[in-house]
Figure 1 (cartoon, rainbow, N blue to C red):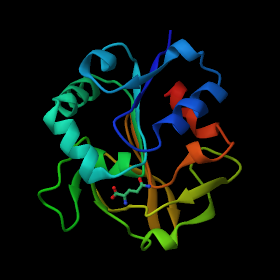
Figure 2 (figure 1 turned 90 degrees about the vertical axis):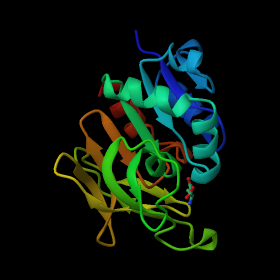
Figure 3 (figure 1 turned 180 degrees about the horizontal axis):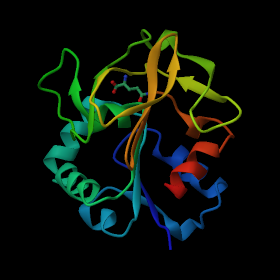
Figure 4 (figure 1 turned 135 degrees about the horizontal axis):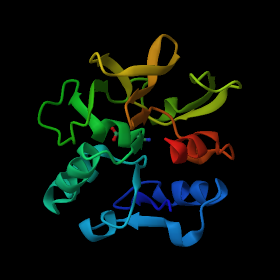
Length: 190
Ligand code: GLN
């Protein structure tokens, strides 16, 4: 049985929960995660888009960040979209004090495509997918450096916008904001 959690502290978590339903999960198997006890009920976790500074502070304050790291290190697949990828990073460029989980051996650069007015959509070729996906980029980060265990899955304008490190995945863009559930289906099979 597969039960998937979506971190529900702040951000567009409801969109991910709907996308998981569209990808075929029953309502009871899509869980909003705000406390450690919610995390204990799920087999994998999505960290949505939102504000990484705010969510980082809350993860630290309630001990949920620590619990997520423990589960991820024990093999739980985790996928971060946009803010989620920032939270998963080992380093945030120019912000050494920003709270992060340090799961992905990467450095991310926040707002790497400009400010909110510079949000845009672009077709993205993701490794392993025959047809391109529509990438929705909203003040998105990019991966500016990565360790040897990390694989780039997609680039846009020469910048890395999707990575995988074993069962950990990060995307700069928001598949949950499109009708296309291919990435969600792929994550369910990881
Ligand atoms: N720029 C935001 C941050 O740094 C992330 C934006 C998003 O998740 N869409 O937290």
